[in-house]
Length: 218
Figure 1: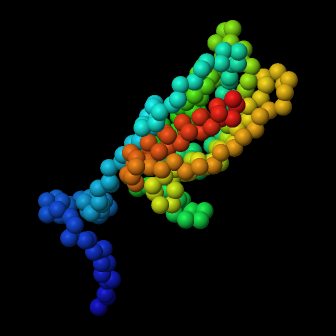
Figure 2: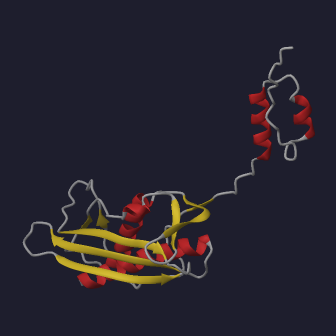
């Protein structure tokens, strides 16, 4: 007597599939049934919080500054940012050189776009006169050109502050004098470890950097 091999059907997990899906699977191709069961077992993704840096630094006051009409500043592009900030995740230091994304939190706007814009606004307030970027309006001729490069704009390892490291140079637009060079390293405390508090700390850190640049230039 000739014996024929018996082909076994892959076991289908039934614990996470609805009863209706199991009964509806009769007569359907096996691949379709498996796909429906896997879809039923998948956990829903957690909601994402989209953060933005506010136009004004919360809780920080800018001392009034007298306009300096004889100098016209231009913030040169690009404002340098380290490569790890060129993403939408909010990164938190975990000790040493490692960084971890804060779960469920994303930047609504790339930092490479928002940081130069807000830094220029803070410079304008601290300097007391417009700070321009290219393209310049007709008739505007800068007398000093500012270049800024960030080495860090990171959440601290304890999650309760933002560490900023930056270098800048302020040069005569015609090259008549050597550039003035400066750097800053500081930590801006956050009011908490939640996403909104960390975003506010980022914003205050940019304002503090602008004030230090202007103070050094005076």
